[in-house]
Image: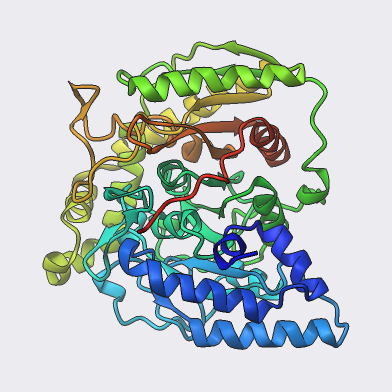
Length: 472
């Protein structure tokens, strides 16, 4: 087995080989570090590597195996952390000049759990400032490139995490999603990412009030089984997170291959408001949804009349960013991303009635999806309205030659942050330019298991992992 093949193995398989010492954690970690040193200068996925620490963890992991000690579920597996989550003693910038020299004083709850499970931490991955922009670009580290086309964006805000996994620069990546920030880059980079039910994975500590209301932490991986493995290590309540959920005592890894006998699946190309979708995305999505009939599940189109969540989400983000960052604007304006400056200014001008109106509309939207999931088990949509677009811009102005609004390319993800429903992006095809296309799989509240099981079923029918980006 060559080094590239080892780099693209599943985390589950790597874990088994480390436990048997067919491959040591040190060997695997060194292979991945070597690959990062070669490829990261091209894609800019990692912003703060922690290679010496990773080597130390890997060495200890192998010694634990030899001593016959009890091993964690992620024992010895090279893993990355988005630059949003603090790691004690490591620089954590949140993609912002405000935190350029910030050294974290404590571990994030998820980092703590990954460490406890035995993960080898390779370093921090790049993100947009405070996760606000849906591409990965900031004034400290620059832009993360798409592994499938270095002139295209990786998406955001977890673009560094997604680009690293797509490129074989680690087996597990921890991402965050406040409007699509796990699912969009997973779609653009041709891998699997899941935003679990809000509260399923704890978020602690947080940076201001913005990060408490919409943010979901979750896995970005190449194999669905790796997402299940990682979620098993991450899930469960935390006393520091007021929104964290009690554990359902479900082992996702053990239940993953148990396909539900009956499922009713609805799909939508517009959620009732999306105006334009790329023709290739539409074709690949419609071709893909019919695959689920092979399992005896009912698949049918469904109609929605929900309000476009753009204004709702924007009000939440601007008001909360306005509260968190408004006092810093005078001093830091020139060192903040222009789009974030606009958001903070808009938040300062919003009224309490504006925020209450968005809260009311959010409640109405939740009720609409609650009613939908009384009739259906799963909802399918495209993940994005088009494949990855050009570097250097925050949004495309046209889709299929039609002029569109700044958020028209990403109409499908935000509703599920506002409602807290579990949602995943899985590759479902390729554009004529060789760019990945993604399908979003949404489940009932708290039903992360069915989302994973449906994802695994689709992966069996339409695997994508044999296709790898080329960097010659």
